Image 1: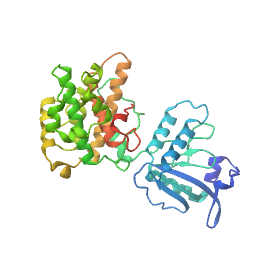
Image 2 (image 1 turned 120 degrees about the vertical axis):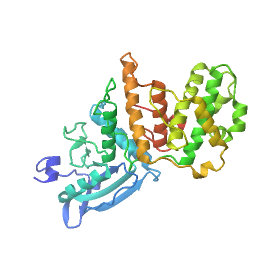
Image 3 (image 1 turned 45 degrees about the horizontal axis):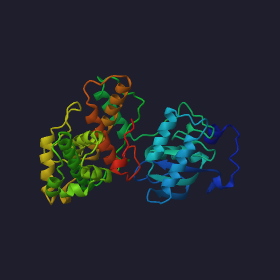
Image 4 (image 1 turned 60 degrees about the vertical axis):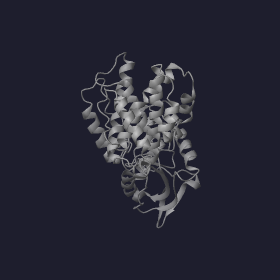
Length: 373
């Protein structure tokens, strides 16, 4: 039985919509396939095919197309959120490249091998979304194949294994079914200069939050003198806080916690003396502030600053994400996790999500960064 017959049933005909039919030279059994890959650079299509179109996120219509595709997936069947549907939705959010092509039945195995390397899911003319082995991740009526598996880069899978081993003694234990975060081939880190500016802005609001929380008054004038680059990098929400004569207590406390976000970004920038430290211990705010103000006075720093290797940053992201899951799950159970400080973990997760774009569309602003777990 051919691959098409296995997919659509023995003797099944192709869909009648002519626009969904294509031809591969010398073979009248060809299928229009749309591949959705999460890698920054899509691999060469090294299998017999006829290319129709390729595009990436620079295409102004790509974002709207992916939003529509995600809506299609979420609307199949009864629309009930299952783990498989959720993970497919997350894959679509991470897509960076799309390729449309026709491929003959006999060349589907070669296409599947390419899809596995490209970390791609495949949309077929019958309305199904399939993995590299042609198992249905979701069909037009909302059903799935039990054997279907979403693609993840090998390094992301290995990273998850290491993280789960490191968190083995924590309760509640992160589920093994919780997907990997990102692979090196998927991530596009913020530019180092942008990360430095963000860290300098955050140290302004963190010190202001601490000072206002203690009743010592505003540090705005001093910060304008000693950290003008940080003041210039404030977000609209942060600017409002810095200018408020009497900010509300909730905002003041939240801004004071930004020391932890500064710390992880400064570590990502390899600023001397900065390390994340254990996740159950708050950072030494005084030492961190001095290091950041020293950085703010170094006018040459923006030109020479660089980020750590992406692999190290992704290790920290995967760990912080699963730690945040532990914290949230424990609190749902009415407890606090031993060995983790919820505030430290949340700030690290927030900063790393912003830095890597994890769980957020490209270009998401700091104030709009999300940290689902």
